[in-house]
Length: 133
Image 1 (spheres, rainbow, N blue to C red):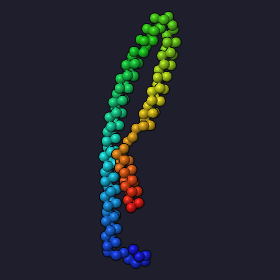
Image 2 (tube, one colour):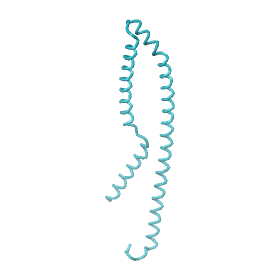
Image 3 (tube, rainbow, N blue to C red):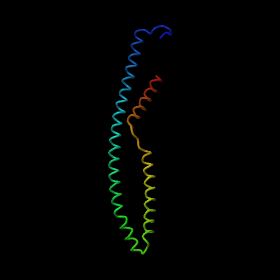
């Protein structure tokens, strides 16, 4: 291509073909991202609903059982019920902190849109190998 001169018809056609290829590539990547977004959303929403229902069942069950257990332990050992309740609360807070730490490590390792990122990596590798040719 000569600077200052209009492009030849063959050069215009190749530029249009390149632009068309880039547009098709971006469209394909967008569709893949859309599909993976829907999959990730459905997976996460299903897990969230199941988690919230399980959590509600455990909380309600434990709220009903805890006073009876405090009374049973206090009566069996001759302790005042407030000490048993505070001991139970301390154990629960400790377990909750351990579970939050485990949740943090699991959330750190979760990978969404994995296939899209793999495709981008392969594309970069392909472009780098063709650049050297």
